[in-house]
Length: 505
Image (cartoon, rainbow, N blue to C red; front, side):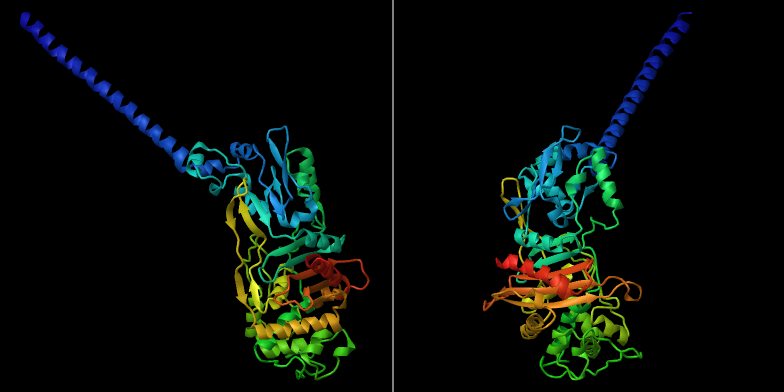
């Protein structure tokens, strides 16, 4: 009995203690593993997936935070052309535009509902205060999720030139781009019809209704025609053709006969290249005469003589075929075909067939000629600053391409001056200034039945002044009720007013 009792006591005590200890260890291990898994999940979510979750459309926290303070401003000279106002709603502040329609092609829009475009989009981080360059404690701000005051964007726009461009276009559909040739600074950027970016900056029913109305407008007021629309440039492209012919020795003397026949039958066809004036209807014209009267037959002939490869090279040196032309807003790609037969090349050399350009690129053509053959990168932003005015980034002029030698550029300058003084560009003359220009009337529509595009490109400087002109302009009027739609009649006066505004007269 005693032995059995001792055996029972001996067997039951130690084994029971060992069983409890194992279970406890297993539970403890499970708890540790659970903590590790939870910590790993938290780390994955808060560290590795933080950016993805922050930018998830369903996450409204960042949107609320973004509009919890006034947005930084976009400026033209010393004047702010944007602002912020309290809403009293879920989002504390919304964007305002004191002169919204005047600067819409420059600023773009910032909307609580529809996002940001153009400068408002490109420089959104700076304007909203989330750019790490705005604060010297950027790392701590990132950890604490503290938002710096929004920075400011100073543009290169000249207020007087912008106002002149808008007034000149009026109710017509079209665009103006003006550039300072020596630096590439964009002095004016206007697209009409325009719109008010402030009309849908908030998130109310009225904002949504304003947006829907703009989207339904067949005149496309929100299309930036200066940067994002391409048009056949018509005879303004003859500046590029003349430059290519001179640069490649096809023409050496602008006053000597070119050898262009009349009529000029396009190669491989029985179709003559028709001129718009009888002054062009004879053989043996000089390049100067052909440019002065805008003779299709001569410039088409010279484009073919110059050859496709050299025509492409010259066009591209002025900005054609560049799909990444940023100002910093991305401009649409201007087109000059790299594969064409000779008849197509003849048409392309006078700005027809598939040749198409933005007003920005045609302004670069005029500016490059005016700047003695050096084409500068166009730039819309002068500098970026913090809210206290200290600089974040200062933009500097940069060469895009050397399109022409100074000698050839001088010859093209003379051709453009003669167009204004003696030819189709007379409406661009400015008293006390030297003005060079080129008209263009580009056909469009099936069998050319559409209203033509009226073009004018030009530059101007005070008479007798040295150095590059302070302004070069491209104007396109894309839809007009005028009975006589010509570049000289419609577009040249607008260019003249913009140039006068920059010259100060």
